Image (cartoon, rainbow, N blue to C red; front, top):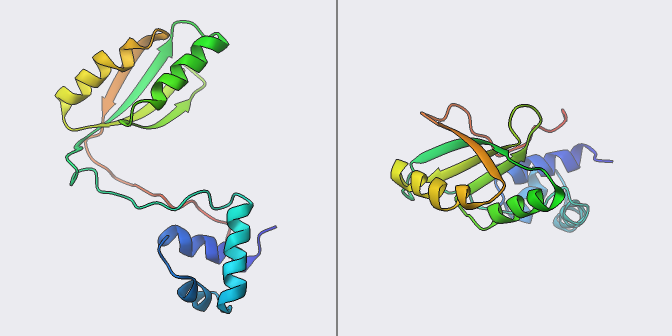
Length: 154
C-alpha cells in the first residue's frame, strides 16, 4: 500500500527523473538512506518502470504526428502476434493500442514530413500481411501533452 511519502516520491520523480536522492529526501522530509530505500522498493515493486529523457520531436525534425486507425483482415492468434511483432521493428511507432469498436488498433506514428509518413505507410505498415484497412489523421497541433500520471490526492 502506498503512503503519502511514496506518492510524493512518485510525483517528484515523474516531474524530474534526474532529481538527486538528497533533494528527494529533503522534499519529503526524510534522510537519504530511508529515502533511497523507499525509491528502491518502488522500483522493485514495479511502480517505477524506467527513467527517461523526453526529447523535442520538432527539434529532431519529426514534425508530423499521425494517428493511425487500422483493422486486420484476419484475427487469428498467429496473425495478431505477427502484426504486433512487426510493429516492434519500427521506431516511428511511438504507441500502439489494441481497441474495441470499429478498428482493431490505434497507433501514434512520428515522421519527418508527409512524404516520409507516406513511405512508412507504403513500405512498412502495409507490408504486414494482416493489415486490411488504414485510416490516418494528422495532428494539427498539440493541446495537452502529459507524461506524469495522475496520482491519488496526497
